[in-house]
Length: 241
Image (cartoon, rainbow, N blue to C red; front, side, top):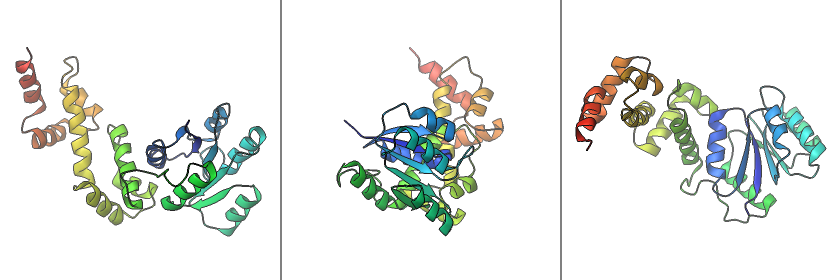
């Protein structure tokens, strides 16, 4: 039976990145804030992985709530703050370990295996052999899930603690295309599937795929498929038995 980890992280990109890699070896219970973490405490868990900075309360409040119900549960605190006072507070609060962002995934893998007794074979991201690839695969999973939203390169880079330049270079190295090209490819692929639904207009599909401008959607779609969305839909209708 797989071990269970409570993952408390408010930034969706980071949470998706960690969940996507961890769930191959562990059962993941998600929480984006204190109240959600508390509601998860009725479930069985073997370890808590907690972000220090949360929207409603900080990670230490989550840890305090956990200790009241599960006093011996191992807990790892994650934080982007490196000041000594936070480190001291973490140690006094009885955290099992303290990891500064950007995360050292090799270290996290090692600690999870040690604390949960899963051994050296429990690796984060079986296909991602480096920290950079691990992060990019997490970003790709996030794009696939949130493609219809306003996805901004600068914001995603900040969330994974990378500069715009480093993020862009790493993304292209991993996927062979720029962030914008990759995002458009995902959106257009999703839109092509929606074109099979006759009750949706092309405008509605464009908006649901993340495009605010139908003309822009038309240009991007045509560049990928060699047809406009309307032509693509008509072609499929002609091919239907």
